[in-house]
Length: 278
Ligand code: DGL
Image (tube, rainbow, N blue to C red; front, side, top):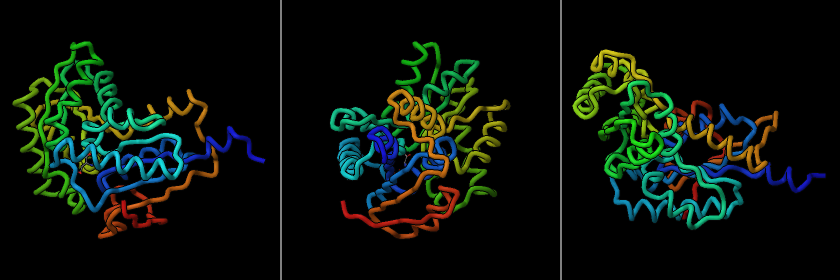
């Protein structure tokens, strides 16, 4: 017979994103917390969030969280950087479960990593204009770290097309790194502040080396969030170490190209996908 404790541990983690990009966060969760059951919601009918106003993103985020909460989850992960930037406070105020975004963990990891005290941030327009990463980086470093960022909107369609190497993505990355150098010339650490950017890690890293003429450490906020999630689950005695592996159930608000793009971001075959109207 299952005890209450086991039942609670077996509850899934709910993860939402504006679309398929959040699968890079699920990929990290599946790697670092393999026993956890996960329910993913991709709001593919309303993507992108990165170009929308904070009010709209908050409204969508609350809606997404309501759906996941109604399925019975033990913790909510906001995989989308733009949604994390705008909605984390509203979500924490409205839901009675731990809510983890990607901004605070990414900022924490960047502050911990930087040696020169110069951290760059790249993300969608919404994330960069919110200054959420910068605020958390300054807060966590008690203002000892200098930080600045630029939007890199072209990386999103490039990643979704699977166009992650070759001349066009390389030139795009060099262009963005030149722009970033104007903002934060002494950068030694760069936060990949968008779900799509981990797919472009190689070309971003090479372009950064070329432009800054030094190795730049890249921070994957999804990976950083996994560590924070593990800490919270262990502290609350909700950590699931099921050795036979956790499940992944996916809900999307539109199914167009979902398997093809989803698998690119997730890095494993996608099954159990259902369309939902929310
Ligand atoms: N998921 C978004 C983010 O991480 C990128 C795609 C979008 O603009 O919705 O900010």
